[in-house]
Amino acid sequence: MLTNFFLDSAARYSTRPALWVDNCCITYQTLAEQAGRIATAISVIASRREGPAARLCGLLVNRSSTAYIGVLGALYAGATYVPLNPRFPTARLRCVLEASGLETVIVDRTSMAAAEALLPGYPQPLTLIFPDELQPPDWASTAGHHRFVCRRDIDTLDAAQPALGAGQDGAYLLFTSGSTGTPKGVLISHNNVEAYVDAMLGRYAPTPEDRFTQLFDLSFDLSVHDMFVCWSAGACLFCPPASAVMSPRDFVRKHDLTFWFSVPSTVATMARLRMIGPGELPSLRVSLFCGEALSSDLARKWRYAAPNSIIENLYGPTEATIAITAYRVPDDALAAKAWPVVPIGLPFPGQQAVVIDADGKPVRNGEAGELCLGGSQVASGYWRAPQTTAEQFSPPLGLYRGDQQWYRTGDHVINDPLWGLRFLGRLDRQVKIRGYRIELQEVEAVAREAAAEETVAALPWPSGTAEPARYIVLFIAGEPTPVETIIAHCRTKLPAALVPRKIHFLASWPLNANGKTDYGALQQRLTGNHDNA
Image 1 (cartoon, helix red, strand yellow):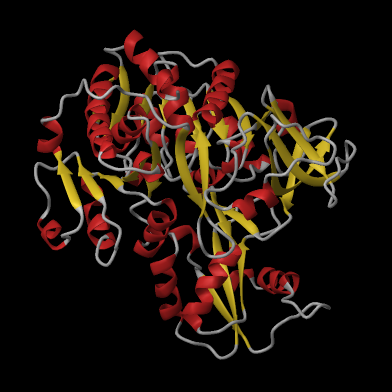
Image 2: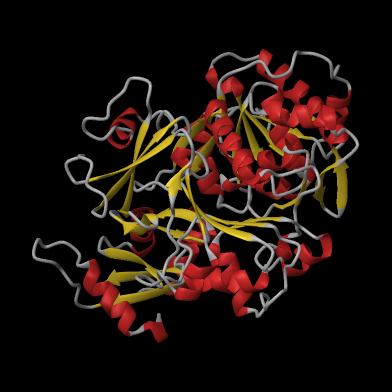
């Protein structure tokens, strides 16, 4: 079980700090005790219900102490935790509730407004746990068919009962952007995460003296790395305030943090703010980047800012558990500018990476194709979506084994004999912005509703460069309609990273030889007018 990593450290380092959050330091012993109390409440609630949904626990939380206590508490109780980002639109959260079948949700104090907006008209009875509140809020009286459990209720439960840690195999259920407009669920098992954590412990050898950054929301699977690689080593996890997440230089310096993990966009933001000058981050000894392509220029700037740190570029889709390949950046390669984008390297021990052609056959080294991943980190499929699972979780031709799980990533790569795997782009219309995986078809589906126009196209900006995409630009055919109305509608349906920043209306729509939208022509138009994009 994933919780064993934490429990072992809690037994060995009970008085050491495990978590710094909200300007408060929490020891391993205190964190374990508080998680146990939440686990008891979850288990008591689950015992009154039947079916697989009883063993799911939603977390409507920001990065608060309750969030991390809730993660551990759900896992202690044998439940699978389901992150619900309170900054996502209410419609999006309801989609996740409906798709997962959640019946129990933990809500922290900062997310009460999101919970209030979520309940009206939602037919499925929910049990909401408010660990920070002595009694339910006033608005709970208007939500008659929902149940509310508060701190005073939790305090009456016997924390020794029921036995903790006995339950199903799922560790967390994460929903990603879906091309049909509906989020896709990925269930990651304890075995998947344990394989990943073991690889990280062997690769970076963290100690109880280390101090980890925690810059990701729980709805981003890279947060799992932060929590469990840190806690497996008996180290302390440092969660900066929301105002410092995208530019945490001063926070890192103040607390002498040693492990860094972020998307490259964070570094790009810090660079624009002139916050990563030479020698700015001397305490760091390990710097990891994942979620987006890492340009050699950003890696070079980070090398100067963190001269005592190794730099590694990690790669992996949610379906393969956080990250599954890595490339350690050598100083001489940065100096020589060997590539515009840092390679994604080689798979971790026990995992496999095969480059395949359009027919599913492995290609020779040095040839480009689709990256297919195999091994103990690969999930079993999509949540309640057997057809999509069959399409994406299929092995390369000739490599089928009954005990080996495979996933076709849709990423276009080349297996370079010198550098390992190099990322060349996507084979479909998926992009990443600030590390979040975005299906452009989902943006287009919502935009069609907003504009009452069928012909729309969404594109990332910038595109085709080593610089990470920063936002989405929307093209719409026909006469202009109020931009504010379209964007406002998108905000009600899409997370902030998916909401278009700019909208262009075209009287003449470009089509390719097959009569379909010519995205290449739109991209050229966008690039040629980048100052107005």
